[in-house]
Length: 353
Ligand SMILES: [Zn+2]
Image (cartoon, rainbow, N blue to C red; front, side, top):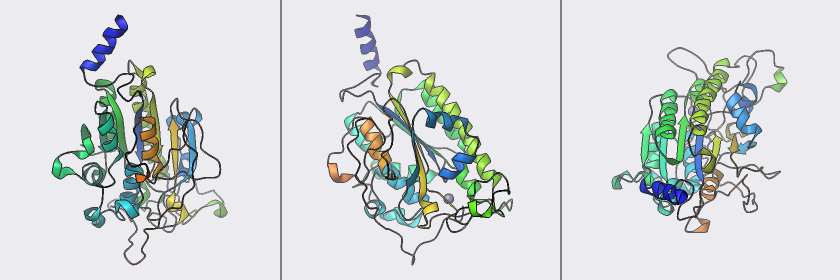
């Protein structure tokens, strides 16, 4: 009787506690780290990410599409399809030709099948919400998300997520931090040259530097930005674990960047060079298992993996390019080719904003 009362109490507020009509208790927290290179995580002081990795699963050799810019990066991650389908190939012009009506943000599918699941998107880079989550803004829908916040700083992103976890009952949270990318690009005002070069000192042998990084452009500010963001992640994890029903909520935490950097130019990215395209994916939660050997997880796998954990199916099974990866019970992974959208005639790298 007490159990029944508890269940009814949960239904009253319209949000699932342990499971809903889909029979799933799954919830996802996606933490996006703009421009964080996999190599940088190994060198920066990141106690909270280290904890997630140690008790979860990580692919530190993941890969994006061949235009390694934020626009196509986040678009592929959140829609689960590559640029040849969603149409985004830069950070500005191509939004106008995007096809999120056909290939929507994964929140769209989740809200169709689990309407009671509260979905929140918090982004420091406004384009993610303005152009992807709310691509259907004419209808006022924003992919069905319950709350969409363009935050003015990374600290404000942290504040919104902590508030959600403390005061609301979210089932999907996407949070994007932008300051790591800013540090990589440097700052024209302060004349900081930047560099996606994760070296804390200049004593690394020249041969150990990768891509366009040399001992002359190591960038302690890039590592410091990663450590600051790790602190925000720590605040978020504390708020998550403090939830009264945390043990029953089956959260999958995913951490990933949208691109790498310094593959061709030390403080830029966007090129089809491997170091610009190399990213990582950290999974943490009861369902996180291990990544298959000898394949690289891909940006588009993140939407597919989130939906699998949420027990949400995409109506047309072939609609997603992404596949479930790193989770218990995932179908076997097929290492498919990534379509190319790189056109040297129109391409412009991200040299900072
Ligand atoms: Zn950038």
